[in-house]
Image (tube, rainbow, N blue to C red; front, top):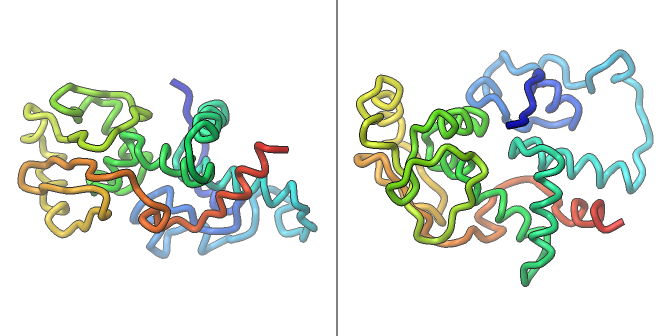
Length: 208
């Protein structure tokens, strides 16, 4: 299973804003973007004029990197989104939000999507009672995500259980901190996806 394994802080520097890829570290003084906000590389400090294509590319890369999806899979999501009724950009973000690793992150089980992806691949979660270790698993309305019963007593989830009590899940998700489970109540609307994306630029990029 392919994934990005290089330093993630350079991705924030390349996009020129925080993508919050390292969880709590991004909110601390240790954040690399705070120390050096210029793009990576020896020519990072040069100012370059960015055209329409450059803006579209950077927006596409930003969305892809936030969700931790590689190019081929991201393009497949876009193709699926074009076949859905409604606004293509919103459908694309909805597909990404309904990924299992993202829902695990949104429910508060992990401090970042990368950490949530690792928890899923290690087989800690079940969907509707069935153990699932595929981060890209697409959830539907009514699906229940829970920590597997045999894993709840592990030290990791004892700590997670304490943090869940103060966690506020998005409106389209329900969270039962005591049972360490959550459900998809509805498909997320655009205003329920608080991300600073201009998804129309992504649509324009793939529609060239």
